[in-house]
Structure formats: structure tokens, C-alpha cells
Amino acid sequence: MPEAAELERPTIRDEAWRYADSDFIASADVALLNDWRTISVPAGETVREVQSHLTDDGASGMVDRLRVHVGAGGRFEAFVTLGGGKYQRAEIEVTLEEGAHFEFGGVTVGGGDRRQEFVTRTIHAHPNATSNQVVRAVHWGQATGNYLGRIEVARDAQKTDAAQNFRALLLEKGATANAKPELEIFADDVLCAHGAAIGQLDEQAAYYMAARGIPPHLAKKLLVQAFIGDAFVALSDAADREMMLERALEQLEGTAL
Image (cartoon, rainbow, N blue to C red; front, side, top):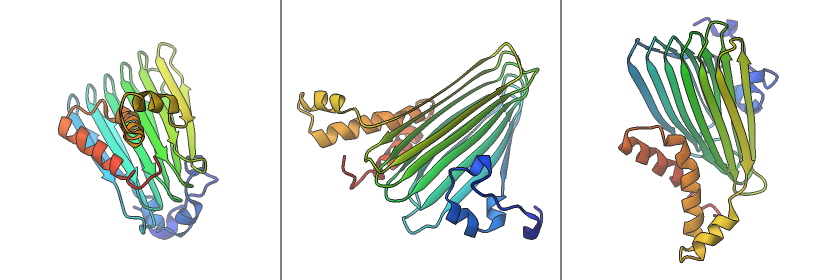
């Protein structure tokens, strides 16, 4: 890595950092902000990361930046929960060779003045590669959940199939969610889609469940559980899937559901 004096400090004027916590990036170690982990997935193999970043409220911030190269026919899966701490950012840049796949499931959850964000860049560099990204955000108080997802399809990357979906659930009026999906496509035989929706808890569904004997608090918790669970549907390990869901739901303790 270059010397700290040579590193550039990002600011919210940089597109990829536009929703970040400006106070944190102004004061954090510049080496931390420029540090990238790397993973290389061999052709035909599968690598999976399952992470829950659930720091305490006193933590100043966390940035995790990851670059992944997936060989032909390989598969990389990442399932990440961000909750707790004042600012958390998980950034993933993935380059896919022919027939490779990238699967991502992310959840941001928190209240107070927390700010949590996922930033992804998926590079379909060769034909027949696929990617699927599902991000769910649940926030209350003055908290913010962000998702910046960029998909790039090279000119020769025909038969690409790429999708990303972001949904945010705001439990209180002061909470915020930001979504910035991007598609840059140079091939002409592709399937690429993105969707984003931000809203409140479905009170009609909660009323329907309560009318059938389910206490209102439990009904709302079950609806949030189903909402968060969307991000972990593709996680094939049942124990990991249950663990990720439980840890995300633990962050809801004490909320006004």
C-alpha cells in the first residue's frame, strides 16, 4: 500500500461516498479508508463469506472494502449484516469471468443516528456470468440505510443475467433510506434489472394477523422478520441463515414496533 501521505481521503463529493458519514471519513485513518481485502475464487469453485458487524453504540465506525475475482464457472457468495456503531460501510467489487456467479445478501438495521451502507460494483467482464443482489434496510429514530449498487457489462459479456433489489422499511418518520442503482451495459444480449422501494410497515397485514389472535407486537416482529429474511434466502446453510436472521432481529430489541 502507498504511504499514508500519498493516499487520497474520500469525501462526500465522491460519487461512491455521497451518502457516507462526512465526520467519520474526515477524521478516520486514511490508510483504513483505502485498505482493500482481496479474494480470488478459482475456476469452478465456490467461496462464501458470512459476516455480522454488530458493534456497540460507542464504536466510531467501520469500513470493510473487498475486491473479488471469480474464475470461470466459479461462485462467490457474501451475506452481511450491518448493525450498531455510528457508521458502517461494507464495499464489494466483484469481477466475473465466463459462467461465474456472484450472490449477495445484505441487511442494514439500526436506530439512533446510525448510518450504514452497502456499496457494490459488479463487473461482468465475460459471457454467461450471472449475479443477484438483495439488500434490505430496517431503520428507526434518525438512522440512515444506504445502498449504492453498480453493474457493469462489458461489450463481449453476452448472455449476462444480473439483478439487484433494494427495499427499506422505515419504522419511524425520522429514519431515512437512500438507493442509487446503476447499470452500464455495452453488450446487447443481456438480462439486467434493478428495483428499489422505500416504505413503512404494512399496518393492514399486522391488523390481519392481530385479528387472528397474534399479539400486535409479535405480528409486527414477524413481518419485519420476513422482510429481513429475503436477504438470506439464497444462503443454503440453514444454521448460518438462522444465525444471521437472529442477530439482525436482536438489534430490534427495545424498538417501538
